[in-house]
Image 1 (cartoon, each protein chain N blue to C red):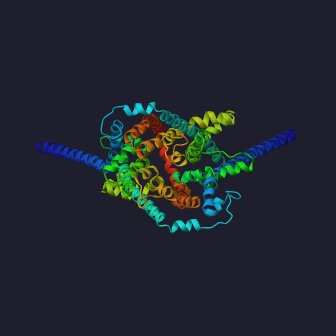
Image 2: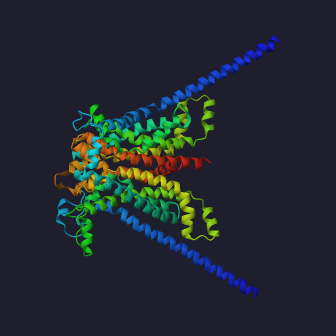
Image 3: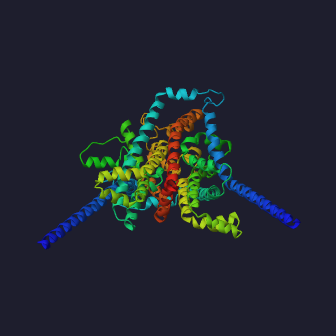
Length: 314
Length: 298
């Protein structure tokens, strides 16, 4: 009797000990996990989160950064005609480029999907990815050279066909179209590989089933391909919208905002005002105007990604 | 009678099969034709870069004949750049910044991804979401407050500010794809290792890193691309030629006032694009797989 009670006691203490060690184990695991994440947390805290709040603080100072002016910089910017043009041009640039990139990328992905898989496809894909592989700042230099007013290579081609010279970067609307064209050239390959991966993940049986039901090619596109690709299309478009909206390289190198500030986007205008003219608060305020739009897009991207993860998990 | 109908049906089926085959063939050749048009359009700028880089300044300014062709190809521009001390400095700076950035980014992101994929701790879920959100923050949003911060650290016009800032651009996405790759490793593998008495570091170096090698290659290429091609930060924070990297060095050095040495600029662009092109030529598959997995797996 006494024996058995002592035995249960030792058993209980043993299981308690095991529970304790398990707890310690879990604790150690989570501490370890936290320590491994620490460099990442520090990096993000110091160079992303802190600057973000600092930007809000900076944007509320006067030019010499001596007095607090509240929302004065934002109001000043909104009233300025140049800045209204910046808002218009940024939206035009981002929306037009992304729509064109998505359309061309979709067409290219289909064309690639038509040709047989394997080395053949890889070579074509490699050739089509070249614009995206060259660093953007460097390829934009080439575009600038091709648009050059005096020795333009494009104008030479136009002249051969009997057309007049076009002042590519010298006139507002043409310059706007040129910046958009360069962005489309650069970004289309990205859409192509994303959509190609999505196309390949659509099960062949769905097309067979649709074919048996007598679906035409267009119907297959609208009722099989597009619904299956919906999520990737939206994630890619939103992601590209963020990147394009915040683009700096193309406009800075191609036109530096000119002619008459007609091609400035938020990033280049912030650079001109904040770094070149030295009005840091105004520049910070200018960049912060991007934030609401980026936050909206980020929200939808995140929702799309989590939805996608759930779909794959189930 | 029945034989003829069967025959008839067979020939009909045969022609139909043929026409289907023909249709497929037409679609195939049509795709090839359309793709060729796209390839030609896409390759116009690189082709023009190459053509210009082979021309002498005299030939460029003479403006005779087609600008798309070279009459007297020469490698003078390339030779000039290779022996030009400033260009050498830019190249060395770019290589240095890129190597350090890639190394730092990969260490940070592999450690963090391992922890976020396997060891849940308080707030780890929020942190993964936060990492993804950071990936969506473009460099042009924060470069002005960062200018002030870099100034406070005394790193304006110092190469090291790039090494400090580039990881913020590379780490979030690298962590994100590494989380995806690490999560796909079966849990039984590390449980077995734990039972055998392996420490976490051993599990990471002996199991996770070798198994997730394709993901690591993809993340490394991403970090490389970001730090090799970044333009805004060096343009904003560096101003003397001994500290500059390639992207800004080419522009500020070879364009003096109104004098554009286009032959040299284009040759410099080619030389500077060479490392990414070589890397992509060999490792494109890994990168594409990593990118699409990042978007599809989440």
